[in-house]
Amino acid sequence: MLPLFAVGATIVVEERWHDLPWSAEPHRVVTSSADELVTWMPAGAVAVRASNRGLPGTEHLSREQRKLAALADRRVQPIETRETPNKLYWWRSGRWSRVNLGWHPDTGDFMGWYVNFEQPVAATSTGIWGKDLVLDLLIAPDGTASPKDEADFDEAIDRGIVPGELRGTFADETDRVLAELAEKSGPFAPASVSFRPDPDWSHPLLPASHAITGVFWHPLSAADVEH
Image (tube, rainbow, N blue to C red; front, side):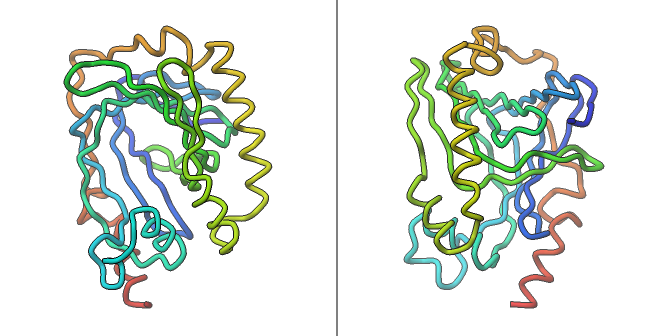
């Protein structure tokens, strides 16, 4: 069961990894029920993420290698990012995926769906939290689906970063997502693709607690001292 939020409210969508803060994004609530949560984050919104970019020993690593290294050794620092494109997010209670819809920030053209496979979200005092678990699925506007980061997911399992049981869990979740795609239901319904945000909504902002200098990120400093 998902927590309930007022339509139009700003919530913080967090990621946490081994009790460490991993990301914080400001989202505007579109719809909210015990079974389904839909949020909006426009291009240009400022989020904060844990990253090992620029840290000693990471200079020679590709982006994919850096991501796995960060998950493995948890040696990271918070960085600010400006989000793009315009995105609509769908969570369903108990589901192991989040479905994102994207629109080009300049033209407004629909860019397709991006499915993150992740642990089911839980409530916090400021919104929700979960964790992306490496594997993704790209779905083009014409409905063509392509797995993403399969090799990284296999490596994460082989290295013990994520449990091997997730292979079966995510295979089942993929079947559920593709069935919804075929039915054009939920995030794949025409009404979802034609969504437009309330024109009176301003850019959502992170609260001071989750901004780059906020208390949410203090555990990373303690973890860095331990390293």
